[in-house]
Length: 253
Image 1 (cartoon, rainbow, N blue to C red):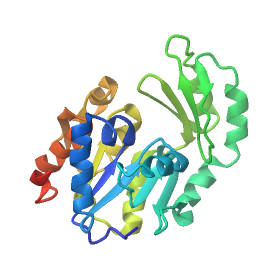
Image 2 (image 1 turned 180 degrees about the vertical axis):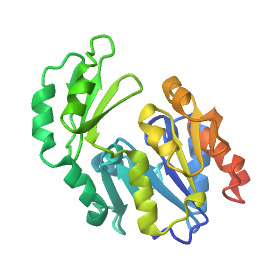
Image 3 (image 1 turned 90 degrees about the vertical axis):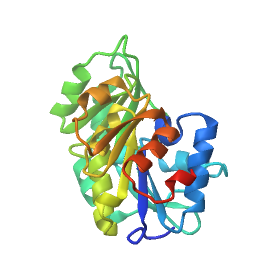
Image 4 (image 1 turned 120 degrees about the vertical axis):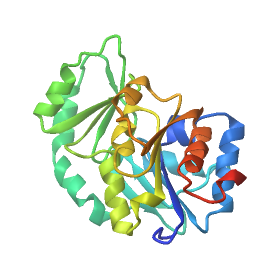
């Protein structure tokens, strides 16, 4: 995939509920528009999903391949090479690796059997993620994680992520954009749940798509830089590109 420095516009988007959200017609409109403008429209997936999931997702020809991936809730920063392999960028992950250190085994042990948490069946590098049952969850897990030197992030009232201190989607996207020398004014960040909060306040134009988690909307600042879309999922992304006038041909979508 290509370097994005000279692209007119870059979409940095969450997947579930955002890029993959909305009805099929709206998704097709957005995906077809991106494909028809790939010479000057870049695509970055900023997601809680891991590279294996993204690879499987994009093998379906309906979904355009991204140029870069900020995955695993910001703990993976990777490029997509010419053979469509997602390859972590070591220089951008050094601080993430060092912040995580040997926390993984210790945190797993400390949270084993904790009420309301079930570890996800995913290969973890620099994070641990759980499915959360809000009815039985004991929020002492948050204090425990913080006391051990990590960050806890609850989103959509059903996911519990344990991350290296200070690492999340927004800071990792900014690190990638700086590495690529991409002006943040050319980037639209898009999301829909609390684990997208740091992404939407990172400094780029941003959109909380229609149907976003109520807790996310309540925590977002009131600012002209963040658009609260009515369109759900992909429709909200198209709405925001037009709202911020980020690409002259968005009306074609």
